[in-house]
Image (cartoon, rainbow, N blue to C red; front, side, top):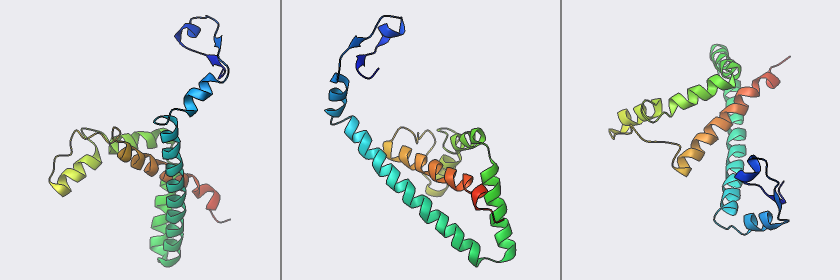
Length: 151
């Protein structure tokens, strides 16, 4: 399909026109579109890998240094985070960063004194990528608990 012109008319059953490599030429010569998205994705990938590894190492070091009671508390917290289903996790993240009633907006309003209500975290590319990074880093930390439990 990538060698064809696929538009609305094709959704209605009309055959797609053969365009060869024109689609690839259009995408690869679009400096503001494709290459910008590719660069952002690469930077996001590098940041997520580094942050996930660093946080995992810090949690491991923390678990080695704390006492038995605190280790149990941290383990229970990690187990609860691992056990949370993806749908519930998505709901919680949506609730945290909600434009009107989000916990983050409420906390920032209380801490800074500025009015954060109505601020949309998903419109600004930088804040959007910060939220995506938090969700992605939190996800593997949550799911890796089942593989790292001692036998």
